Image (cartoon, rainbow, N blue to C red; front, side, top):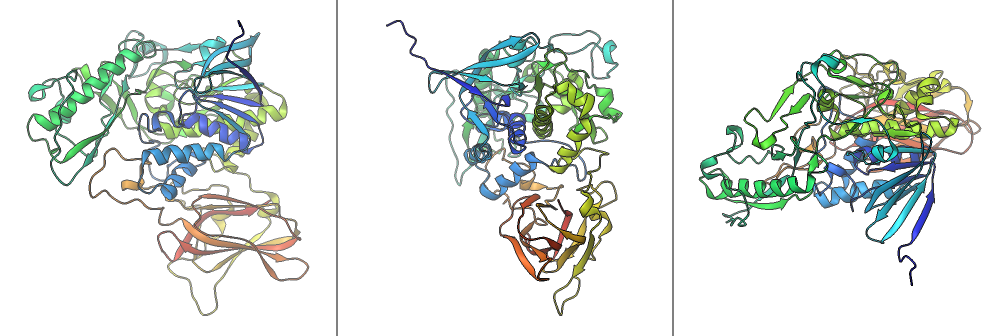
Length: 596
């Protein structure tokens, strides 16, 4: 009697990530793959945040030719195309879950809300969370922490500086800013999804649904049902407290969504007769709340002017997409979307706290102005920022330094690590290992064949830029079945091989988004990117015997970046033979083939 029935588990790790949205997942995976032990605390039963089945916002990112994000966020999307061609939201949850669980160094703690932080001066010692499913406390101790929770739940617990709301125009000189600062934010949305059926589908609204007789209260552009619409404009809550008012706003959003569907179904012909309401969201997806403050605050002008930063570790390129805080209730346009020249750089100094010594942050809570947030908040951008933070944490741990210490002494190491892991940093070039730089590329065709539609381009393949930039392809094209040989200047013991294939960074149609907005009867089919190499083999020329030996043969490859760990006797050359593409084409396109 008198003893608490709730157990406490204490977990010691190298790096603790709070928040399992896209940013948090990428941070945790990046750190784990580079050798750190990671605790990933997430307050929901599934990973993904706004991208999960609980909210159902598709992944968006940089707009522009060849600017699709790579690295872990691309890996997740290619996994989804491979394992989930129907783009089912539950399977998408499973793809994210599997990506986290595959990493043995990640301790994934789901259904756990971060409640408190123990501090030692300006450093976090531990965080404590309550796990609802096990009715137990989880205490995580670590030298480094990352707040990737969207709302930045850890930041106020640790006393980190943050902002909420919109800056006055005078502070940064931003055209999107207002004359006076205020606490208003972009609102939150509860999305809906519909499914087309072969016959008319009736709908009876619940008695508490809102009513829009004759479309009263609906802006003109949203008065007819559109199967390509994901109802982002079902948005409320920006005029109040975007955290404290969430439950009340959720109630209003659900009633509004049901009323909208009632209007589509029962108030005239809006093209929805054969459509049924398939899903109604009850967890609001948020656009904006707390923004943590780092050593740099990225502004609208930095984005528009494409300012270059020596510590750039990520990039963005979604339009400046500022939503009216009145949302659905507003009389002005629902959002102001301003296209900008892309990509713009995101500096590392936006990703750690200016006053809490061991706190990173990634996601929509990074150190940006409200106007800049209107672009940086989209989830593919959050993902590449998350990978930068996770990678930085491992470098900080290896050098025994702080997040700020990375900027002061190790920013070059961080940038090169990100490029090695297939992240793109505008203007940066990956350092090619010396042995690979000295090697010679050549093409050997099968007997009796000739090049098909392409000629090998060897020079760009080892230039350290793993995607087309401007008018420069930076890759090589070789016929399927041909052998691309990398011949060394001397026998080498190869430890790893790095290949970057073409995954089509300009994917369109159903392949553009990881998940659908609605479910038409004759939905467009999704498929793996046509130029991606599906089957290939790698061989090594044995230095002792002079014979080619198989290193690996991979079938049904669905990776852009392929890293192969090697062993065996010293070799004098490596050979890559593409055998089949996902689209059945005759020419393989790749951006890197080198080794260490």
